[in-house]
Image (cartoon, rainbow, N blue to C red; front, side, top):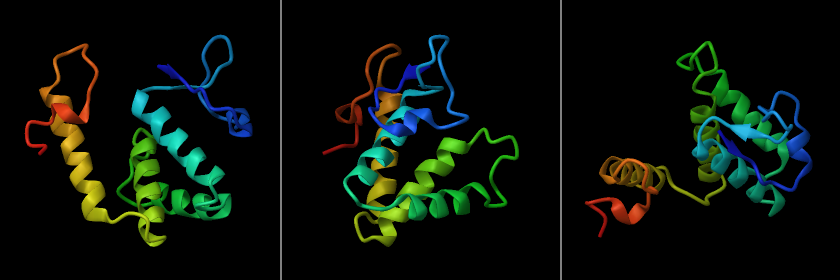
Length: 124
């Protein structure tokens, strides 16, 4: 798990996974990055917490979501994407193209090496 280095009151959120020393942790680095992006965008007044909560709640409660919550951060990213799209800051096609590029980069990266977008063999 990776630590969250966010300097925000959100680190006091109930239910946030924690390390033995009490620091927030995430199961995957991209979970922490999605969380940090959301905090950053909120701090820049891109959206308020009510908008975020409504977007995340709608996504988490979709019928196709895992009942055990194992796809929570997939829902998180989908909610963030949807919110940014509704605000005119991102379009779904660009987000999907980047997701696919990151996936190809991950598949082309040797085990243990950092995944970089430049590793995508199809990236121009």
